[in-house]
Every structure is written in structure tokens, then in C-alpha cells.
Image (cartoon, rainbow, N blue to C red; front, side, top):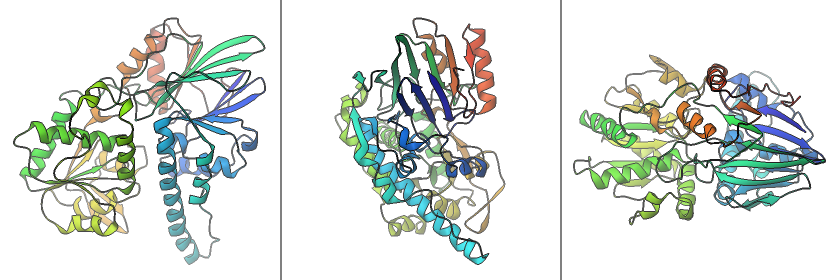
Length: 460
């Protein structure tokens, strides 16, 4: 048996784990690296395995750092099945088409620069045609459904409580009579969050591969996230400003809309302002949420009104509609991608408003090192973007409790629910310092812990 982490090894992104057992050779996720230039370069390297010899891929969920290299995998000869939960299967084509569009546009922009300097043009990492080639390979499975894929491999999905359709993977491996249970946590969510269920608790495993995005910190809890959001809105509207929210199109945006709909119902003094969902991708994903009420939590199922619609919510699909938002000086809430300010319409809104002290830039998600969002969040007094140098005068706010990831306490809670102590816990999907500190905490609780490095067999 051989397990190799090709991504999310001492970094958060690029999740890709290869399992070789008997005659079976497969992947858990095939994600894109996101962050600084050094990380992005890894997306262009050759795969450290023969894509044509991969039998199948088990996808944990629909975030790009877990699925973003599937088109490249197919383009390199992979022809096996791609397993996903039903909701993730609906999200995959939408997310990959958007990622491919960004690849094509970024390459087009880069090639104009290369042409001016006499350099050869580049090809995009993959195209929308490559992304379309993934869809016929997708196979739907439901939570709790055990599926035998080969003589050596049986698996089932359990709810990870991270985003709609997110899953923990339980692998039941049998190599010449030696049976092992291996659990990949995927990305674990928080307990008691809107719309989706809590993470499933697993009874036992021999080996656990566990995400550690927030393994060395606790999410801020001075106010429930809904109350914290309400305070930011009241404060900003009170000074005549706009709230600009860089938001991930998948899950975070839908959670924001859900909470705003609750605030509109509950708060009689909620300001009469427009809320713009200014993201074609997020609009498509919101429709997927509407199609899957069967996996909402009990509170969301009990809502008698439409949880993703309320008076004043405006879906702006076209670029013209988006530009009109900045023509108005009225207070408003603008939810736009990308979540880390690396692309998308949020950059145009920042261009028009980050220099205005009336406004607020509200971060509700993780900001990877090297991204514009991280630069702003770390306190930059000015930023360089779109050929301009812009003063940062807007109020910069972060509500950490919006994270879709479990924090240190949540991760420990999930791990300690295993009935039998695993042989080893492998920490993945986290920054190096975070992993080191979380590993020390787990060792103090009696767990055997290892932190994989990229490309090495962790069971050797």
C-alpha cells in the first residue's frame, strides 16, 4: 500500500493524494494550487504520475483547490470515473467552466505583454473545451452509500459540513488480506452553521488524513456571525458608504444571502438598501443550492419562505449591470468574486471604492499569502492593481467566524470522536506553522502524528 500527497502538503491548496493498493491506482481530489507565483507555477508542472494509468478519482467537494486540475488530468489521458456527491456533481461543471474562462483570459492578457517584449506566447493551463470533457466522466453517489470500486477498494461518503455536497471519504482497503480503513477528512466545516449539516463523526480508522487550515487558532466568537454582519452594515450605512464583500461564489455567498434574508425578516430597522449579488458564477451556484434542499439542515428545511430571495436582492449578471452599481452613490451591499480579490468584479468595486473612507471592505473568508486580499487584510496603506496605485481609506473588517472550516477546537472535536485511536494521523491542507503547532497539540493528547511532504510515500 502506498499513499502519496502530491498537493496540500504543508500548504493549504492543491489537494491531490494518490493511493496505490494492489492493482488499484487512484486519486483523492485533483486540485489547483492557489496563492503566490511560486505556488501557481506548480499547476504547470507535469503530473508526478501517469494520468492515463489513474483508474478513478474520488472528489471530496467542489472547491477549485480540490477539483481545479481535473481538466488537465483528462487532457493528459485520464479516462476513468470521477466520483462525487450529487450536489458536487452539479457544481463541478459550473466551477470548472469558470476556472477555464479565467485561465483563458489570464493567458490572453499575459500573451499581450509577452508580445510587446518579443517572447513566445503561452497556452492556457486548460480551456473551456478541456473543462467540458470532464463532465461525461462524473458519477453521482449519495452520502452513506458504500460502493465497491475494485477488489481492493470500497468507499463511502459522509457529510463534511463544509459546503453543499462536501464529503469525508472513508476508504476500506484490502491488499492481499491486509485490511485497512483510511479516512480523508476533506475540508471539515464548523458546527451549528446555516444551511448545511454538521460534520459527520466517524467511528474508527487506521489512518486519518486531516485538514488543518485553522489548526492553530479559534474562530472569533465575540458576536454570532449574523450580529457581527448587522453591526458592520449599520455602521457603514450610517456614514453613507457601501459594504464591499469579496466572497467565494460557492457556499460563502449563499450563507451571506441566507443571513441577510434573516436579518431583513428579524430587524425592523434594517436599512432599506439594495444587496447586489454581482457574480455570474455565484448566481449559477445559488440555483444549485435551490435544487438541493434535501441536504439542508433542519433549520433551513423549516424555512417557509425562500431562503435565497428577499426584497432588495439584485442579481447582476451582465458587465453593464455591474458597472451601474458604481455609478450610484447610494449605500449598498456588494457581494462579488473572487473571494481573495485575485480576479473578478470585486477588483472593479475596490478600484471605485477602497479609497473612500465611507466604505467598508468586509472579508468573510480565508486570504492566502500573496493574494491581494491578504495584502489588504494585513494593513496595506495603498495597493497596486489594474495599473493604478490606490490609497486604502475604507474600513477593513474581517469576520473570522464566517469560515467554512472547523477551527482548532472543531478539528479536535472531530478527531476525538473516533472510537479507537488511529495508528497515525497525517496532517494536510494547512500552512507549515499551523500544522507544526497543531501537531504538537495532538501529540500532547496521545496521537501519533506525521506531516507529509509533497511527493513522498507517507506509509514508507
